[in-house]
Length: 436
Image (cartoon, rainbow, N blue to C red; front, side, top):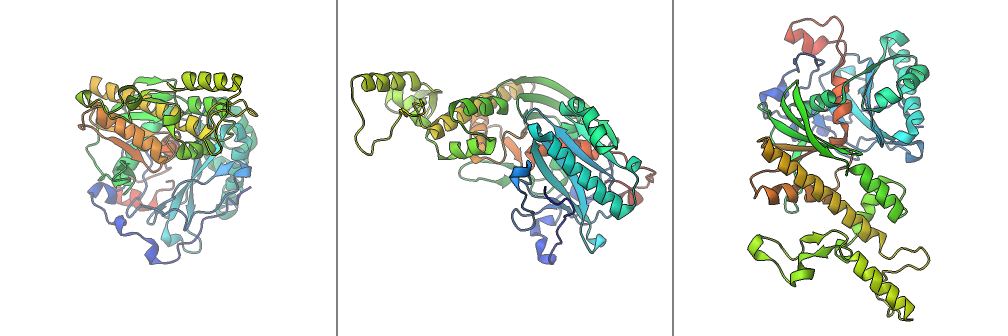
């Protein structure tokens, strides 16, 4: 099991990127919204991947897969963790102080477990609890787990039994919105747009963020119209989400993890299984704006090519040495798993993108934010969603992504923890609050 006693120490002042200079007054202020915990986010920044992030053994069920958020000016003790337990993944957020020098503040850490390994997640939280008690002399009653997602109800009794601390269940949609609002307004270089020519174009922090559309892609997809901090409505969604991709690819390719599936999609060629506009017209269909590479029918070539391959096999034919094989007699698969993965990824992402655009048009929403563990910073997924929004809106709208897209709910639950005996003075609240 990974060591929860971490964090690592910031080696020197050069670890602070240039981007910590605030480009908006919102970044320099302390959060003071009703119902949220007051924290000091002055100079907050995302730690670069690889340099300060501990390596965690995936065999233990935990993956530390995203950059920590440094809060260099928050020095107060934090007595809670937050977990968002979905159908496929459990996402954990917890705070650690910088060792040897509390004046350096601390950081938010992000960890995920497969929900099927929820016991490993609870074991890790238990180790955090033990460490916290040793450092601060806390009693179990002083500690708390903020839980959201469906698993907050499904595993409620189990969490209380194993951890022996208070477990507070928070509304999933509300937590998603609190988390997204926090990232949009408070964290530099968090929100970005994506294209093949400009892979990560960071958006400026904004204070006038409402209204917007949140498209949360987990096992399924929820689309939420957000009109204000506590004004939101689920306006649609689809059952064809990350769980669909995971389930179908586990049947079709034999892949065992979602990351393995995304890796195969990265190497695949969807034109081997998808019917393209060029396959029908021989060229672009410029009159209606369709390139020859546009997908006309997902998996549209499968039936024809499968039948031809079977007929060829019955006739005793074969492939010349070096030809790409579409029939694997040993496994029974007729197409390369990489090609299948890429095709299905495109199909699901395109579907989500078009539905998101239609919902944004119906409800007059200009900004569309995509969150959820389906995305995982995967460039093909982001490019497909971006292209769908750009294509259907004729370039008038953009798809916005987040570097911590899978942790919106967990961060929202984390922020909902109320500090005890907090002064009403903003100056005092920003520096001496008892909880993050």
